[in-house]
Image (cartoon, rainbow, N blue to C red; front, side, top):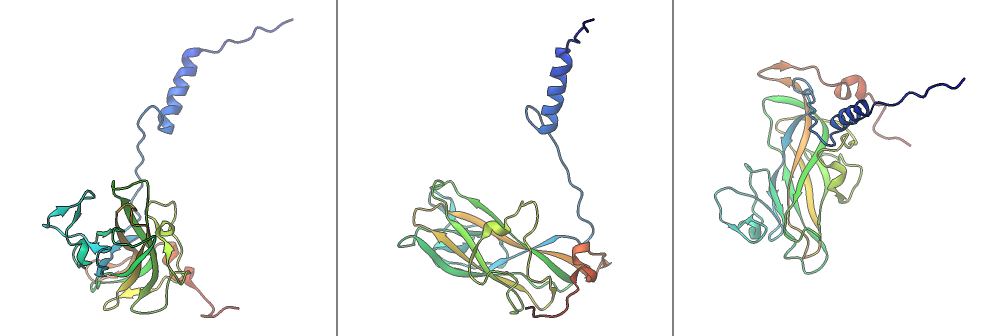
Amino acid sequence: MARRRRQSNPYLQSAAAVDKALVDGVGGLAFTAQSPPGVGRLIRIPFYLTTGVAGAISSLQANQAVVGAGGFNNNLAGGVANQTVPVCALDFATLPAAGATGTAIMTTPQISWATLRIVAFEIQRQDATLNPASAGEVCVSDLQIGGGANLFVHEDMAPSGIYLSGSSSFAGLRDYPILKSPNTASVSVQGLGAPASARITFSASLVCEILVDDNYGAHIPGPYARPGALVRQGGSFV
């Protein structure tokens, strides 16, 4: 005896496809909101340019005339540093050939009201519309706390993509040290490209956990920053 084959309902099929499309964000809007990490967790401290590179790396400043197709401020040629504006500009126009610019130094301000533990380093960058087909690169090295040992694994410059903001996870560091005033963090920055490379705006941040806050008290840090997660046997391994 032959069984009667059940016919699929085209309406139900189309409804399921629409539902899937809405969930996947294809053909509709999808909203995702992640909860904040908790009190005093994963806060960002901006770096500010303390030593610029004339004609290549400079801090953007307010209330200055904008020049050039890339829309960068006229202080770019001076390699001007700024302790209030954390956004910097990287321009390759003065490079005689493909290669690297001079090295700039960026530093965090003193945080006198809290004791923090460093857990990550982060770079945000945006290429300008000028010559977008020929992209340059922001490179970093020598992340130090108060002139101490380099926290990066690499001794020389490395592409900022390793530490790019928006990645699924933070890049690891050699240590998660305490940051307490008067100590500050510093990092070296260099541009790598050709004279025709796109101009870039970028900023850098230090990701920290607040351990003790003079105004809000002591916080419970995330599991990655608690003492049990930082146990070590010594400073030298074979």
